[in-house]
Image (tube, rainbow over all chains, first blue to last red; front, side, top):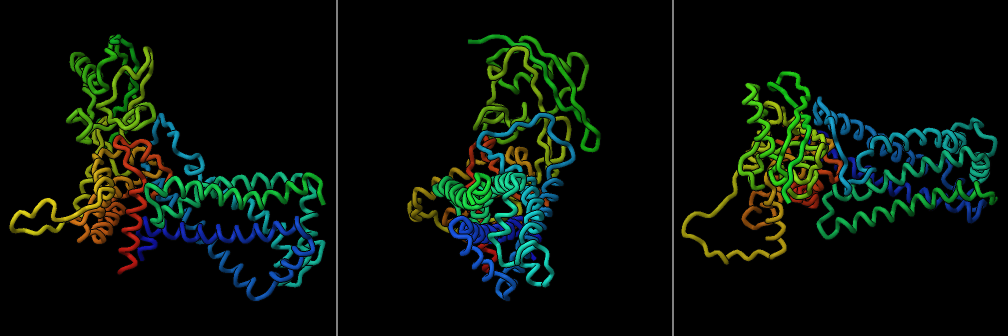
Length: 222
Length: 251
């Protein structure tokens, strides 16, 4: 199977799952911003995307995308480590044109994944999971999303944790978005700088929408 | 203006492919700032021979930046700090008096050290070989203008063809990936009508060979382009991806 055996095939899998996850983030962030505009509207979205069949199928596909992206990342990183050889350079300097994020995608990805576990516990476990199983895991009704958000972000430690998490995600996305297009072959000399700018814009929009929520609560608006 | 500098060299010495190597330090006085880096190494080797010591093995040939034979990872950069130059085009005026210069061989699993600073870059030849032939019509000599080629394609193909196959891309890459080299070699033919006949076949064979020889996976850091002595663009890598993926989807 060339999607596993060839290097470009493996990169194709990384870029397609990555693009899919970026689209999810865009969708997720647009939904989240509603909590600032209208908490009752946000609760309606939470009810709509509760334990319905379409939400469950969607979550399943999403989890699959994450798993494939992470497994391939580990597989690729392991192979790249081997390809580097046993002896390391004694003196090695970075080039100015090389983005810091591009050389630290695995570390950034690990940070993102670590916080994801916390995030799933904070929200998913108390909302969709509670609704699915009927077990009461949170202090509010599972469909009262806005109350969960307000409760969690009334704690400044959680606000800062989420800001750190989202910053790592921003770095991951600035390299990931244009890199996905490059791996798909959708790039050339003219479009290379443009694609990089587009990647920065997309990642900044997504992260700004996400990060505005903890900042909103941190600044004391309720 | 010519002046003399005294330098300290930390050079990787390794007797053979299977032997453990280590750094050795050499002091070199009165090196002309006008001499090239390789001339400086020649001076050091002359000195070592006079002292009845083993001279340092390093690759070099044309010494004018076109053969791709010289390598050397100097002070953390393949071919030294200067952009768009090979090691043979690097001059001692770029170093300060009293400076310590670290010289290492290319480090990559696919480029095993033969001796000291010399590495086996035969893997590149195997990739070229895997690419196969280019079909040409035999018979009378065709008119040079019979095949129109847009200038932008001709220029792109020439830019790709400027790759000298030195392996700096692999040496600079944190993943030990040979994608820039393979991309240049695939692009220079894929862009021209003469090379179109076997284009998809060639992309598949060369990528398969590259993977087989143990080069890493490209993660688009762009370190290769930054260190390439011929400034081959990573946009060629996008073309290689495109050629390879469309060939695979056609199958």
